[in-house]
Amino acid sequence: MKGFTLWFTGLPCSGKSTLARKVEETLLERGVNVEVLDGDEVRENLSKGLGFSKEDRDTNIRRIGYVCKLLSRNGGVAVAAAISPYKAIRDEIREQHQRFVEVYVKAPIDVLKDRDVKGMYKRALAGEIKHFTGVSDPYEEPDKPEIIVETDKETVDESTHKIIRTLELMTYIPGVDAESEYSDEEEEKIKRRLKDLGYI
Image 1: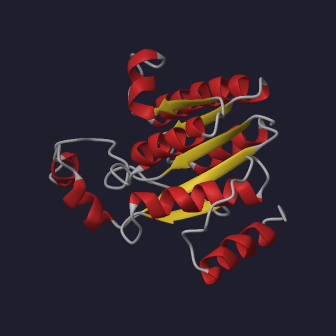
Image 2: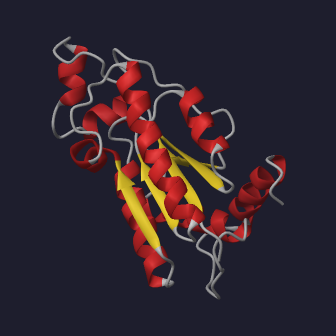
């Protein structure tokens, strides 16, 4: 199996890290060599000292992208879970990879505010936190992500299955003989998206 990068992008509290870990768990069960680079952990260990200006955000994403490139070109699956709010830098990272799959983790702000146990959205909306993505800083939605999961409408298992099934159909990971959890209609939606993007 060739390596590739699976890049989760989305607003804070959208579910990127949760899904990344669930996908990691599924891939490990199949014997796939996988490594997760979580945005918060990277900021603590690889990008300590960087702030949240656009320049610092771009630097942080470039560092994550570089590590993903090293992992994937050596046959591993690199899973990145970072807000990565700017389209241009995500496209730049994509260009550096032979096999890159973008997952847009989508949910409306109202749902994210309710999920936010730390109260960050509330503080940002009150002006207490500057440069907060989705409130005082922009988030640029992907134009043509390979996968869109809507975490306000789907369970974690449903979103995970959609991601795994898409990777199987792209032949990036081996398929397994298991009854699909999705209906024929949902399966056709995945195939149609991949066909529109030129994968199948």
